[in-house]
Image (cartoon, rainbow, N blue to C red; front, side):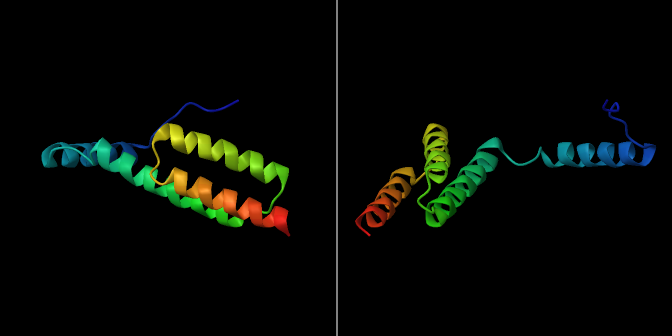
Length: 95
């Protein structure tokens, strides 16, 4: 069974201080910036997955799922990564 979320008084004061500081500065990081960073990170991870593809069926399924999610989320460069994967798969079949 999980415990209820709780804070110490010192943690509560620190969170309150941070919230006031963010309010004073006009807020935190804009959502568009966070999303752009997230999409860029997804793109890098997808490229790493394509580079590490070992030719297995399990790896192909994992990559297909990742490509579909990336495409749905709007990750830039998905088509290029899909093309790189197709070239890599073609080389494996020719060998």
